[in-house]
Length: 113
Length: 113
Picture (cartoon, rainbow over the protein chains, first blue to last red):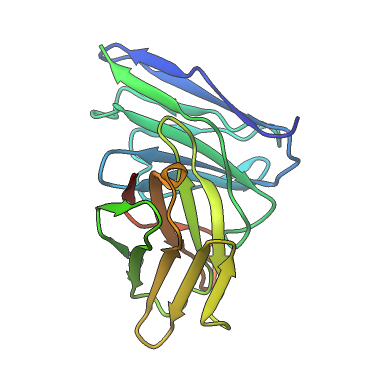
């Protein structure tokens, strides 16, 4: 089965802690994206990567970091600098640029203890 | 310039009726306009998309109408069914070097019997 997997489904973060959200795809897509979803605010782009070992900041990158060492994987780290991390985080991938269909994973809900 | 404004925020339609969701944009470089459908606790999925060389695109009960001069586009769901109850996002992309999708804030659609 081809698709995007995100883990964990729920994640709890303590104050001052960095946490990493996993995103894996077996669709052989070049581009991968991380979005944050808050009620009433739609999807906001955190980071995106069009090719391995390269990534760009999106609209709300502060307090987040990413890596793209493998084509299949695009993990997102929520650092302690992100003061309001509670949200639903969505990973997506596409064959190429923004005019291609983006396929989304099931999401990770991050909660702060 | 990068915003996509979506309305209404929520919509209740009777079964069998027509659901209409509207979006407006300012960036004239946008040339790709998809609609995504999201069910609770899931990632969004592409529903239908249009490019500005046509004024309308229909797929089953779903139609996108596009007005380039007004910089508006809308989603029409004919014969709305309870299974259509979901959150709908419009989006747009385009322009030199712009490999991002800009999403609207979403419309929560509820179809009542």
